[in-house]
Amino acid sequence: MNFSQFQNQARLYVIGALEPEELEEFEKARAKFGKKGEDFITKCYGLHEAFALSLRPAKANAAIKDRLMAMVKAKKEP
Amino acid sequence: MLGIQAGDPDALSQLYDRYNGILKALILRVIHNEAEADDLLQEIFMEIWNQAKNFSAQKGKPLGWMVTLARRRAIDGLRKKQAYARAEERLQNETEQQPDAWVHNATEEEILLSDTRTLIRKVIRTLPPPQQQAIDLAFFRGMSQREIAAKTNTPLGTVKTRLELGLKKIYDGLKELRDEL
Image (cartoon, rainbow over all chains, first blue to last red):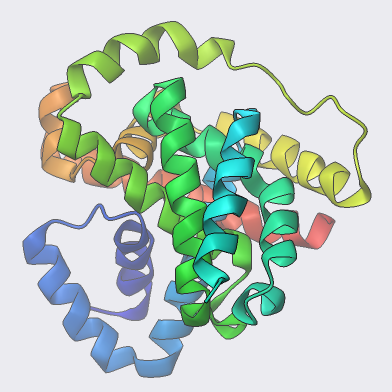
């Protein structure tokens, strides 16, 4: 696998779309490309952020935050 | 994130205010159920609180980390409940009708996110519909290439090509977008 092919596979990898047999090949190439490969994979995770940002924000129920903060504070108390 | 890593509840409160709308939209897009999305949102922020020590700024931005976590939890939830059929029906009805909650007094950061959203949508809209569909099914439904091929009655090789081309276009579009912002 050359680096261009690795880049194509990396974009599929970060969204979990590689098939098991492709994943095996990808992991071998990932080890071969080392830091350069890891840096590229990190950049590909920007796709996650982009897909989330493409959606219109939705309003959460107001009680959710109250429950969350109560749980966090309870957990912090000795 | 530093505040959360230090165990400051106020930092979590601020993070929640800033990003709950984005994460809720993502969860809703996956599971299509308002009450379940709210419950999952709460669980995800609790996980963010518990796992904050695992976040590394060198590995990306906090939003990217949170989105990855939220997507995984939402897809896990969808699979556990085996709600594909129900979600499918709701997806048809709701996709075009999500309310735009981005109408309150916007801060500078919100305006920037809103600009980013507009630009990302522009990039996604340039993709041919089959590429958009393949990416949508892979990212928001957690489907494998084989599952997408079966669902869309398309050869596996074609699905792979659609995903590769579509993701490359979006990735390249994001690089340009970063230059514009």
